[in-house]
Image (cartoon, rainbow, N blue to C red; front, top):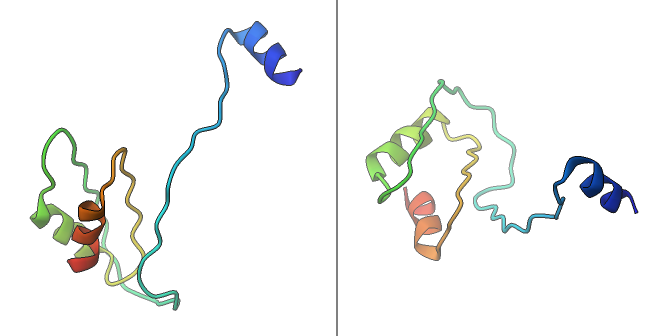
Length: 81
């Protein structure tokens, strides 16, 4: 009922988005020294040097990677670096 009312009032449909998530590495919490940085890529092949740069910025801490398309090979790039 609420969804139908929302669609009627705003003319859009709300649907749940499915996604897949991976967590790799150690579950041990660490304190690390980080420096600011953001790596934006798209429309082509991955740039390993840019990925290495981004991971170095983390100081060995946690990293969040958001991708619209992921393959096993893509995940391995982050694990191997």
